[in-house]
Image (cartoon, rainbow, N blue to C red):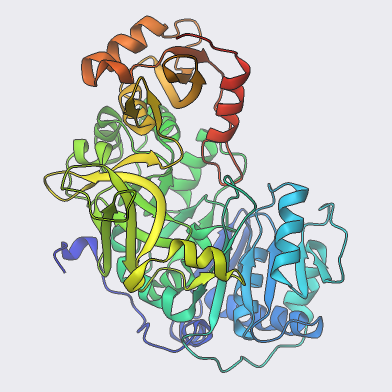
Length: 511
């Protein structure tokens, strides 16, 4: 391993056990009174998490969940979610989160394709059972504290533990399947995002990989997950970081900018914070410098996908330029290749489609052999939908999704390159670029921009001048759309599909 020891600390529990239930039981014995989760005024220890999950497991089993069947969990981020997540695995079933922001069509698709005998839902969820047993959120309190306890299932490392559904931006969601062994092996890729008995602020949707694939990691390190309030608020988040003595925290760049400004004005410091994560997008160098100055911590960047939740990451020792322009180097046990349209390796420095090989990657899509075969190449290589190239130091530089690239006048334009330059402009708070069809020239670029100050927004001319100064002139966007906010999908990522729809409706005809 060529990484600094400080970046890759060792877990406090030996993770070499067959299944998640064994690790949970070890934590309940080793540090029973340590907090596992904090959500507002509710707190739960590792012993309580294990005991209440066994009671919930009994309720799931009574309603038809059996080893190898899926249990769907359609709850908001909460301790209830964490208990259901563990309960399913304790009885040998498969935990599968469902993002509560999904639409009716997407939810129905997941319910049908999963064949789940049980689904856990919010009280107000508009769901009509298709024969599944349902547990409503209000039922969980009695189940957790008064119900009978299940006997843990004796499983095997290659048993499926978790199914994570893709966000569905390119079609209906697919279920990425992970075994206990997949998730156990991912522990060694945690790096600075895990530390013995750390206190971590959790703000990503629990239904997706940021939580669903990290249960082994949390328990092996004995970490406390503090669940962030929704909706996000800078004042509340800063207070939470301080009061809960958070040591690891993630936020999007615009949120970090607000936290830095608020802390500087109030002359507040966060003495317990050790590392920050720039979620969903890299932070500009000046913001990284501000976080380092005000909070005395580095900001790091991670890159992964639903099908392989551990791929690359920057290190705490990397420069601000590396943190901003790249997503770092492959994690331990992870191999990457960049391929052309014929699935041949591109030359170093050229853009190619990213393929990954790792013991942490999914074993396949849930009951979908055809789609599984489409993404797995020979020798275990998993094909992503992302494009990128390696810099001279071996860091991966993303160039966007394979379907996002557009061709302007015969030249390839990768929106991520343009977006990265726009992020450096002080008058821009957030930006996204899409390509749309146009006569003669083929496609043109449309930049959607959120001004930092509504009274002094950037102009198309200033945006084009900035891009032309940094990149090839054909990469400068042809049209500028000012907006109060960028649309996001169920995973809180910028919804490029919606932006393309909006751009197409503008009837741009420039040739």
